[in-house]
Length: 420
Ligand code: PMP
Image (cartoon, rainbow, N blue to C red; front, side, top):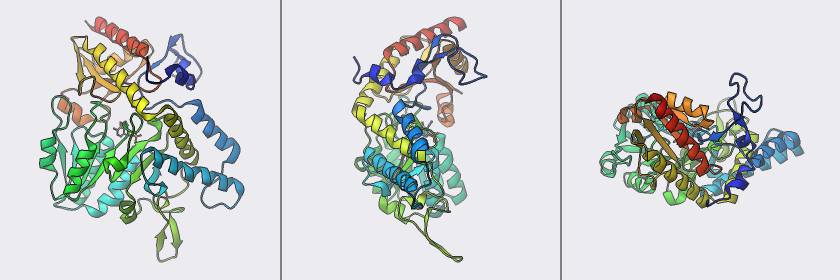
């Protein structure tokens, strides 16, 4: 049995009942042939339950209006819902309140916000930014380029052969010239769960900030930014039952307070003259212009949905499926799996089949109705290090079952035979 009621959950996701095998040139025209869908691409994006879709629909049908500035009733209703959504998201990650939660477009924008608003002003020659070899491009490219602009150095904590961070190397790299340590919490390629609280201690011992990329952790495990002692923590709504176009940046209040705005414009100001301007309170200082209102409100609905299930239960389910998939795939002697053992990873498994390109593999698997990812998963340098251009990745969420993993295994076996 599962730690959660998968059948009840699946009923909230009608998309899981659709069939595939139809005409991809005309998307959304309804079920294709007759192949059931096995959706195992959740690390890229998760599906959206009816409760969240209904929240979006209720907003547009019932109280669509611009927020913050209106006196009229619809604007007040929209403002209350949008502003309260920040409290819901703050609670979800153990932040102290809405002043510590900025709504952004996604994890990538959260990274860029800090890199531009803080990094561009604070970094310079002689400083360094420490990342890991398993960073997603969202942080890797962002800090790499901000370092180039400011003359700072970037350093990468080594990943060992088992997919774990080399902690001695981390202790060597992080020094008194380190200003920022930016680490991925759960690797979207290796599935490694990194010791972010320990890395936060290390960063703070040297007076540096730590930015935790929670794109894969916030959706899949209980997160407490206060326990981690993260200065920044970023995640995306679309990977956790929410809509696209909304994500969050957590920042410690005093840190956000000291930072310059990232984007200027309406809604983020307090007083403007022709000569100068002052800024609105947190978090609005970092939310310039009309925000993604419906998405923000629906983000909170997604959080409510997950909290009803319980994040500890979500995590137990993820671990169960990851271990099952790992064990099944390991049974093939021509399959290489990347990252830590099956009983010590987040809910995803990236792998390659000897002699089969990951793209061919995922295409054959797709013919079986199984949706997985193939490519570099936005970790090109890590793939270079692994010595492959691409890998296939299956990733799991609350509605997935062992039967779906069996469908994947059967499809992978088919690809092995085709290419044998
Ligand atoms: N970091 C990690 C670890 C991710 O898995 C992803 C999504 N693939 C991102 C960052 C970027 O998320 P988004 O595309 O929503 O900005």
